[in-house]
Length: 255
Image: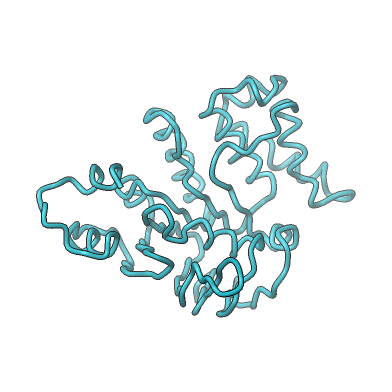
């Protein structure tokens, strides 16, 4: 049994515009599962629905064998479903440590001290730079450091399933390497993760399963690494790319 099961998921905006069409996917316990797709493919909408920020129009979502009813994001966080949204979401006028402490608010008023005693050392061990700058205002951190802080805030929520929306967006390659190294270490702890990205090669190295999302539908799935670039290109763009010698990552960056 998968830890997360998504079956026939439909969602959209407005009265009749569907963004997700009968999406099926699974996240096994302790696995990292990747979703790639172009802008507008429905990747962020998928994560928002799973995180309780957007309503589903149909289908079923089960976590650890139990149905997840329609509920808000706060209820999903209490169930262990935590979203790391696109961009560097920190409270700029608070210090690094205040940002982290605020993330424990879901256990208020009981359990906050116990949670912080467990999670803060983990975050600081994973990202030592945050410990060094714990008294610094978050708004003065670099973009990469803010992303580390965003991940740290998510970890303080003690996720059972971590949803990550393009964690490498806008970051320098050396910082992306550090972020993905940390995600690899989190995976080794048994944390289940669902990640969406456009950088298929980097995601492919981390994830146990991969899916291609195009116009709201899963067009290709793999229980291991995706290696057939022609099949990936066709699933991603909806056509066979005549320029077979073109590097797929380069093609992605131009779309």
